[in-house]
Length: 295
Image (cartoon, rainbow, N blue to C red; front, side, top):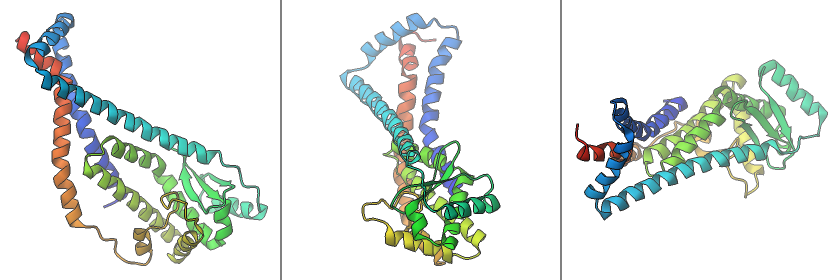
């Protein structure tokens, strides 16, 4: 399986509750298209709620509405954090170091990575990442340029160019928003984690194919790990992970089937409950109105 498969599966699962809510809204709106005056219908809904719902029902509906608002706020906050991080990186000072190194990178880009934008920034930590949602660009830090030789740097550029070609920053943002919005559905978190791992493995494979050997990229990862400060998060940019190191060493990346079965078993009831709740909340005005104004 590929990273795009995990990404598509994550979107499909996340879309199920939205589809359920849309069907509920469609059921309610269909009353209007049938020629029913919505003004008395709204009053009928209020009467029906008072007559047919006890205090527990009101509390449950209110709690579910609060939950929806909470999930919406979490999604917006995920988008905000992603945008803020991108802005922080884009505001890093341009690197004004070795002009010969800059010219070599520009020449390499014109020859091998035509159309790819590369930005050199001033930062002590070794950093190579692809940033930007609509127009992705490769960002390299001065700390990375000081740590790697030319062959290792070429491997890193090929790796990041693969992320640019696949628009991975945008896909990662969308996947993270799905996980943030649906934290109680384990399948979403599982697919997002696997997507993150596989997109790095695929970018590594593209770099290895371009370089003809895994050694330059493996050496670059080893140097980055050795020079990276303890407080620097390994999940940022070109990060050494166990799965990537195993793949570069030719070891198969194993996945636990037991974990997958557990994820599926726990996700199905959670997804069903959420989808059913959304459908009932979205269509409840129509349902309650039918008790007062039957067809």
